[in-house]
Amino acid sequence: MTLLLDSFWRAVAYCLHPRVIALSFLPLVIMVALSLGLGYFLWDPAVDWVFLRLESWDLLKTVWAWLQEVGAGNLKTVVAPLVVIFAVTPLVVVLSLLIVAVLMAPALVAMVAERRFPGLERKRGGSLLASVLWSLASTLLALVALVVSIPLWLIPPLILVLPPLIWGWLTYRVMTFDALAEHASRAERRRLVRRHRGWLLLMGVATGYLGAAPSVVWASGALFAMAFVLLIPVAIWIYTLVFAFSALWFSHYCLAALEQLRGEEAAGPAAAAPSVPVASGDVQPPSA
Image (tube, rainbow, N blue to C red):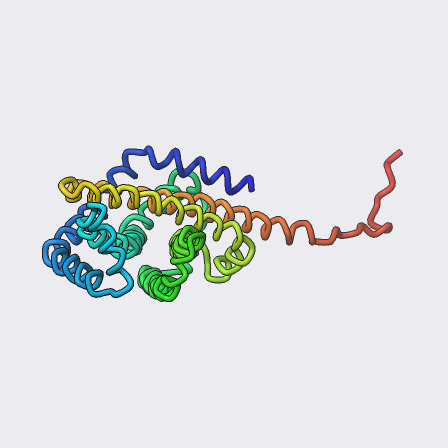
């Protein structure tokens, strides 16, 4: 618990560092360009497709007729953009995590190591290629879990539990690997994950809930259509900062845990070494 809280407050302090703020704008530029490009070509077709599906769904015809009677018939024109936004949000979260993992996480880990752990040996247990493949595989598993769990989101409590759990698991997998790739060997990384799996997963779930917070911005963009284009960069930047915070949190935690593990291993042989007894014949009597 001490290590968890200590790394948390250090990560919060590092988020205020000008270097971290500057790094957060690179994924922002990429995500804004990608979002605006896809939105320009796919937004209208996606909204129209959802609107037609809502119109043709027999279960909702009664609801639309009732809304028309009470003077709220135009509400379905708002529902279609909302459905598109909430469907796209998990993809934006995942893409933000991947971009942070590839572009920001190595720089943030290096920053933490340089400022706090300059003497920690680098055993390079994971390469950049291994990190990318690990992130892609973990992301694919998370996307499958998200798609499979969508029917369960209709149960009110589970929509508040399942997405953050899945995002938290993904964050834990990606950030732990990146935090230890440069400094830990494969064996050390596996030992640390086994020893700290519960705390690392808790950190991932916590950042998963933090990642759900910017959804309020997306919802605001749906309610205020004129401001939606302006709110997209704000939401993406918040996502980026959340994941940057999680990268710093995992870096502080994992590198401190690695330093502690190596300290235990170094102290172990010294403590276990038997003392050499001195033979009685070797003891010289004191001179008179």
